[in-house]
Length: 312
Image (cartoon, rainbow, N blue to C red):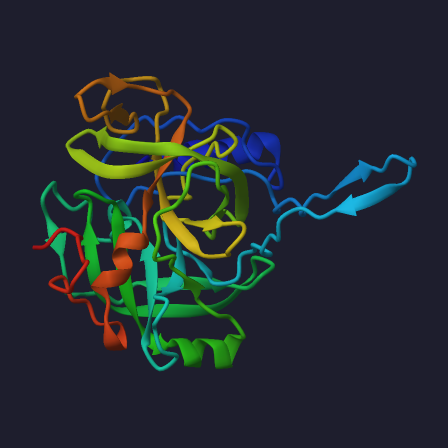
């Protein structure tokens, strides 16, 4: 939940536009507007690896690595200050209005207050749709904020003026599908930033009972391994499971300065109330719990069975 575009751009000037910053850029302010919290690293996803096993006779036979989906930029979007993605539920229909997922703190009207839930707010926000190479191919526009909050999680979901079928027909790009199951520790993931057009590769290190940052608290957050050293601008990036190609979380924050539970310096709180901090480590919010809250026609139903998102 950072406000680091100036610092991030400065880092890019020094290192070169094609090189990702080695460490998260420091943020010096936390004005609640629409802070882009995080930016990217590796320019492309590593290819699937294979290994060879020696036979007793000295010959080698290829041993295939687990299947890996080709993760790229197709379906991601760039916001004015953050990243995001066009998403669908597992049961969404092609004729449904498309949805865009980003962070609650990327909302154009400012950070939702603790306990605040925004539903059905009019919006005409625009998004640059990217193809697999990271090239902007279209401008998509919101019709409303379907849902936004920074309570328990950190998400904004926009409803667009176009359907999935219309987007695919016009641009050949399909939405990313949300996984409907809890992510697993150790899973290989990629954080795909449409804002910076960069992809991080790392693993799910574990899960945080409560992640506290300033006045906000998030539940069951994803902790990355250190390779995902995101900086400003990648807030709202989809976190994609390499094996399934599905979205399992949305990138949102990291501890920049080693401070305890302050803005830009989230702390981990376990079930016993014990607090730990991990400077330089970054986090995401799970997305499987979004799926039960959207029904036929991609209509939000916070009273639906299995929907645990906070209510207004």
